[in-house]
Image (spheres, rainbow, N blue to C red):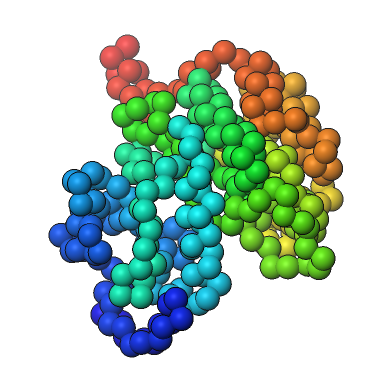
Length: 312
């Protein structure tokens, strides 16, 4: 239990709250099944709602409860995502406050983050599966852009893929999403988002476009194909500088099986000028699909290869 002063919705009081919920605990009208993990400043649980439906419950973490900015961003995430209705965008259900802690519920995806698809050093990704995931994420992004919403933090860990249903692929975490027609800031501000996937215009506090999300998707594509982000550097300042000043990487030099045509495609999507990129995320993925070999299989795991060698 942790005791502190918390101010929520203008009220200040001393609260004694558990740092983590355990299976069987009740929170608001929900019964906890298990903890799913931590996302940013929040804890996420698999719970049963009052109707017995399994949903994901996201609760603002204790260390963020007393931070007005964290509360504002938490509410903002729900407000901006709840109006997006698309099969490839996580569905939002309800929100509220319980003993001073903000919470929201959303669609539960029985699966994992797409970061699990990133290949190891000597692995070739399952291209058929990867391209299908990318098509679905691109569809969700293009829909959001049509609804005047910029996600702002596109990366593999914010894409969820179903374990039993291959068609279940959703974009999640709209914590720093914003309206596309929001004016550019008049001065530099604290960078929100993930530096390894951040477009140059984000890093320089310029006007943002739908292609700003496309840049993050392209950075993810580089990682999905080669196992590394476009500009792996020793610190975030060097990474930010590379996004602004270094030409996009040649993927065919990182992995010999990647066609040179992919270098051109990635180079377009990672253009420093946001207006020089593809017209949509879907167009980027279509070009990538046309350039890559058809359904190149993933090599079997080493344990299986060893068993096959013994059999032969």
